[in-house]
Length: 109
Image 1 (cartoon, rainbow, N blue to C red):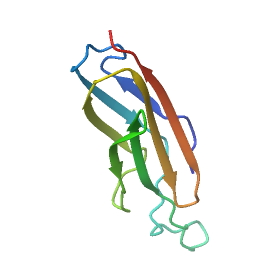
Image 2 (image 1 turned 180 degrees about the vertical axis):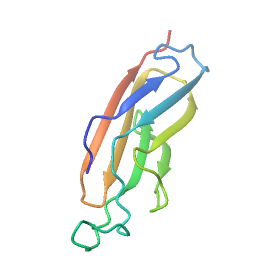
Image 3 (image 1 turned 135 degrees about the vertical axis):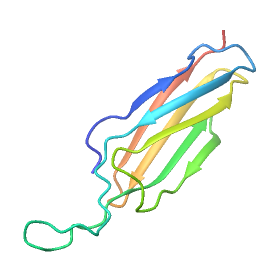
Image 4 (image 1 turned 30 degrees about the horizontal axis):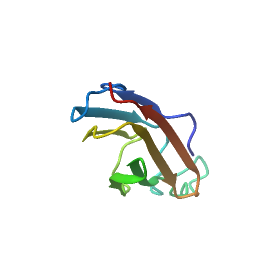
């Protein structure tokens, strides 16, 4: 279950053309593996973030499909070269088909 909006940090939201931009993102999610038992001894159903994508102006920057070994509240860090101004869109989807997105404008200086 996605509980809160993701926390996003950009190294520079107004980079010069050709400058590297570092993105850090954390999403609050329990990441249930399906291996834990509840208080009644029954397995808690698996519910992990199973897909993450990052696009810039519709161009795919990063696609990630985590497995059950990922920790709670997954942290991602990636970089890309700022070629033009535009919109950075990040999208998380979990096993329950919950989707959360975060959009950030980046403007070349």
